[in-house]
Structures are given as structure tokens and as C-alpha cells.
Length: 264
Image (cartoon, rainbow, N blue to C red; front, side, top):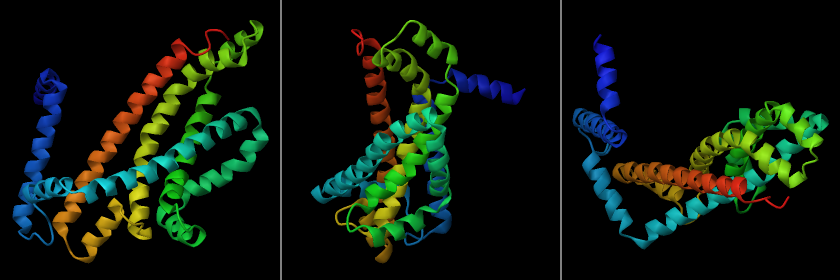
């Protein structure tokens, strides 16, 4: 009875208000934990953390660090999409290719990120962060798209053959609508994985002018407030990147479905 009433009450609250309420609750929990611990060296308070965020945001070096980290991760992420999309299409068409690549991709998924980061330091002089982001995304996008190809309506493909659809028309009217939910889900999760793995790679590889390097410095100099502030920044940037990319992907897919291929 009580749970039903609480659910009804929660559903009546607008979504932005629910989000704000949850945020206030966890900030309150954060403050309580800080008061219990009672040490800025071990655990930073919400007030000092957000104050430090604004202090960092007022410096040009901070924005340079953010831009470098975002560029490195997005470069690896986009490269992973460029590789994994045609790879999934080829393996759906030729089972022999799937036989060759499937074990490697499963191995990548099972191997700890830290192992790849350390190995990449031996293999690469530059580009470790982008390489790690690339490795994290390829198996995810590949597996999702492969599942999408397997679950495609075979009747639509046969219909396209009967009506002699051009390749572009088949892609626009059949493949893109069928695969888009799988691709969107892979991108949403994959971008988050790439971002977290990329920051971890920065902490270990220590490329200049990056958020990962600043986290490492905060650890070395026991700047707990800086560590908390940088963590907040990384979380916020992750959310912004995901929302922005999903918006662009939605607009692009709508444009392709409506316009591209009218003359096909």
C-alpha cells in the first residue's frame, strides 16, 4: 500500500524535479559522510569540491586539459566506429570472417584494461589513450551490430531483391532502420567505456596537458579536493559528450532516412 502510494507520488513529480531531488539527496549523503570522516585529506566536502571546480574552470590550462582528453578519446571512439561497422557487415555476409575475428574480439573484451594500457606503452610512442578507447569500443559495437544483422527481418531483404532495390535504397530503407537501435545502444555504452578507459590510460601513460595527468598529480601531492573536483568534471563531461553525440546521431539518422537516397 505504502509502496503504491509512493510510486504514484513519484510519477506525479516532473522529471527535472525528480532529477534535482535525487541530486540533492546524494549531496546530502555526501555531506554526512564527510562530517563523519572529518578529514579533508581523506574525503573532500561537496562545498570545497565545487568551489575547486569553479577555480579550475577559471584557468586556461583547465580547458586545454579538457580539450586534449576529449580529443584523444573521441579520436579512438570514431576510429572504432569506422572499423567495427564494416567488420560487422562483412562477418554477417561471410561467416568465415566471423570465425577469424570473433575469438580476438572476445579476448579483447576479457583482457583487463590496465594490461592493454601497459602493453600500449611498449608498442606506441604516442596515441596510447586513443588506442585504448579504440580497443574498448570495437568489440562492443561489433557485437551489437552483429546481433542486429542476425535479428533483421529476412522478409524485408527478400522483398528488396524482388523489387530490385539499389544498394543505397536497401541501406537507407532496410539496414539503417533495422540496425539503428543496436548501433545507438552500442554508442551510448561505448562512449562511456571509451571515456573511462581513456582517462585511466592518461593516469598511467601521463600524456601532457590532460585530465588524467592532473589526477595523477593530485594523487602524488595528496590533493584530495582536486581529485574530487576532477572526478566531478570527468563525470559531467561524460554526460555532455554522450548527450551531444546521441543528439547528432539522431539528427543524422533522421536526415538519412528522410533525404538520402531519394533518387536511388
